[in-house]
Image (cartoon, rainbow, N blue to C red; front, side, top):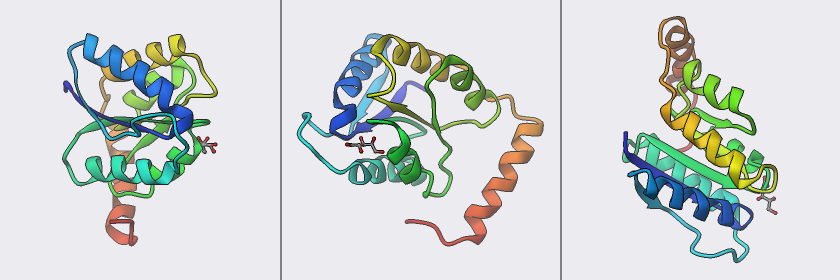
Length: 152
Ligand code: RB5
């Protein structure tokens, strides 16, 4: 998995640029869905486009950043197949992969610094899903996608 999609709003723009530099340096191919600068935008516009790109199968994993990470979390988790996880520490970055098979890392650009964000990203990118009993639990979440009308 060396292909990552990324987006932010204005409050996450600076961190997005930092994350992109790190990913490129590590040999990832990065699709930047914007915004192209720190002018004020609405986070749902960017969260929706990133969540769709994963929900529809164009990308497997993505990173999305707003001021707190909360708005983006609310948006992305409305889409089928999305397991967006807001992380501000290394423990949740590791566990959201091992237990929840997180496919979108959400971070708050106004909550954590670039150094911690980079370590969280590194952990999230390299930690595998454990499967087993955790897959059984994800299967129960997947039933919701099949039975409840969701965003398209
Ligand atoms: C933008 O001011 C801010 O509301 C947004 O980045 C995000 O934190 C929303 O949840």
